[in-house]
Amino acid sequence: MSLSFDQKLQNYAELVVKAGLNLQPGQRLIIRAGVESALLVRRVAESAYRAGSRLVDVMWNDDAVTLARFKYAPRDSFEEFPTWQAQGLQEAVERGDALLSIYATDPDLLKGQDPELIALTERTRQTHLRPFYKRIMNDEINWCVIAFSLPAWAARVFPQDAPAGQVDKLWEAIFAACRADRPDPVATWQEQTRQLAARRDYLNAKQYVALRYSAPGTDFSVGLPENHQWEAGQKETLSGIPFIPNIPTEEIFTMPHKDRAEGVLSSSKPLSYGGVLIEKFSLTFVDGRVVKVTAEKGEDILQRLIDTDEGSARLGEVALVPQSSPIARSGLLFYNTLFDENASNHVALGRAYRFCLKNGAEMSDQEFAAAGGNDSLVHVDFMIGSDQMDVDGITSSGATEPVMRAGEWAL
Image 1 (cartoon, rainbow, N blue to C red):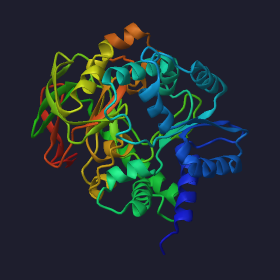
Image 2: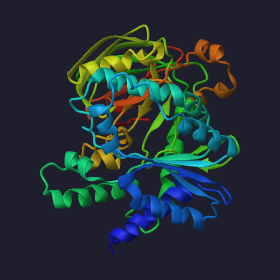
Image 3: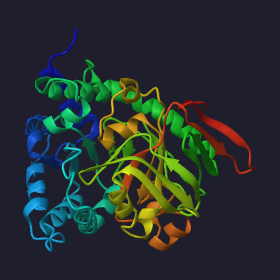
Image 4: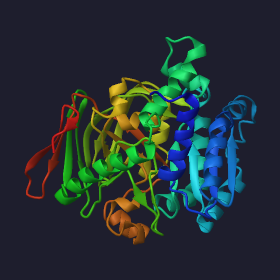
């Protein structure tokens, strides 16, 4: 029997609270969300209070307000930032609160706006939030990122459909990708994390020294540091709370060596960054650093992203996702990294996750860099995988072993 929309939305909220966040009795919850997602925020808040939360608070944002700033604010005001947000988030970590981010925005929100101001705004935001993001990446608290269907995004995903049905259709796609359309999505996610963990453990045992990627437009190799650790699905806070950072998730990921990337990577899906779409782009790496950028659309934004700081021109993540993942099988382009990265192999420019290196969280910045870890204000994923991509693992003896063939696991 198919579930009603209301049942699926309730499943989604319960899944987020019980499996994504694994909210603990007595724990506070901070939600970062757009005003259009109030329907879901209310459901999550109800579920959180039923789970024993002491307080649920919301930090709202609004695409319309963001666009108004780019249209009308003084051109010399884009280094302004609401510092209370950074302070509040730091205090939330200090208290041990849980954090939920509802990621939903118009992929073309800032189309036609000044790319220099877009880059400056992103750099300012990342600078103020850097201490907070560092603690998040060290898993000091349980956190989760999910999505919400809204008209501008739905219109991008389903442009051929009548406007009245686009939002509903996107909701169905979200529910399916997140398995919220199942009778017991929490149990379903427990099995999903088990399967991801099995592949993670296999790759950790292998300890490949490098990966080699081959596909149309891509001829690329990347080194992996000694004692790198693959991660997948479920994680655990420093205090021992299991949680799932992203719903949905189909990836197995680790950190590359920041100085050992060589060759050309071509995108297989557009990248939505800073309210602008970057399409059909390629990056050329030498000695770990991007030395050439091309893009059919958004090249100036991509170049500014890479020029953010020293680390933004290097990689901080490599992730493997089979083409048989539910999101890939849907055939949809979501224009939203949370979903598109789970349909395709991908990499990330910028900051590396310290937990992807043994004892990385305890290392000084200098020790982490010496081990191959990258640091940056940014961490931006982009998709490179397809059903024509092969990935090989290189062993310490120099032998080559198949990891993926034609976009599928060959383990």
